[in-house]
Image 1 (cartoon, rainbow, N blue to C red):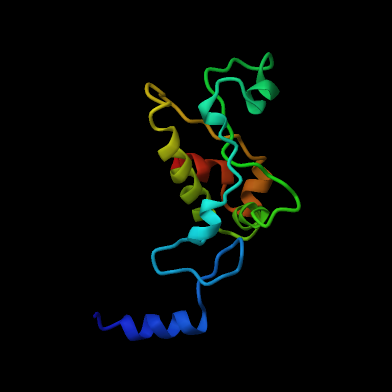
Image 2 (cartoon, helix red, strand yellow):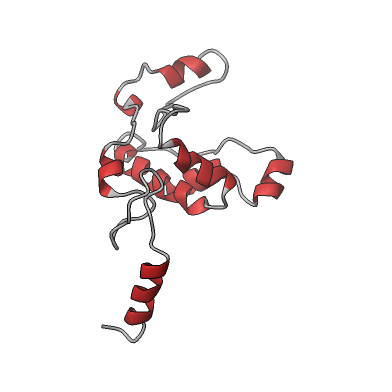
Length: 141
């Protein structure tokens, strides 16, 4: 037990870390999302098929080698809070965390990739936000 343990325990009691999806208290090893909500992520599984909705959107408009999407976004979903926190509540680490999760799933598919290029953010919005959320996701990847 470290000297600071009681202090951190007190802080956790007063300001517990909560799941950004369900609002439940996070266990010490959890970050941003509890294990239950993480298991229920609305994943697209587009990474397992070459023909997917994301590819259809970009096909014919730009040259594509590989394209995928990690999660479905639905306005009524409690998972939208993750995007909200990342984009508008100064939580860039959420992007890195989820980029890392998706990167673990993609690591065998992305052999030989030289670059991961995030979608540029308008300079005015990036100045206002202080970071590009797509770049944070790319860092995690």
